[in-house]
Length: 109
Image (tube, rainbow, N blue to C red):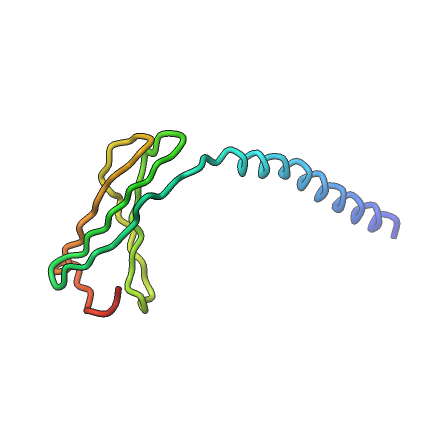
């Protein structure tokens, strides 16, 4: 019975130690995030040929990657598209989705 109590106590102390070690890492990571200001984020449909997604965003550090995540309003799936852009602290970019190829029926967006 003593061994069981020692094992439970050891397991409890080990769990507390792991939590204590990970807690400062989580707080530091949250503080490391930089502020972003979104000036424009829009999607304009030109039915039936295309949807133009526009993004204008600024940050304290260089933005090196932009991905577009879109899907139909009542759909079960989403699509991720890497957007062409030049890295910098301010990004102004567009992505045109050709809906003749990637068909989306009217009323879904």
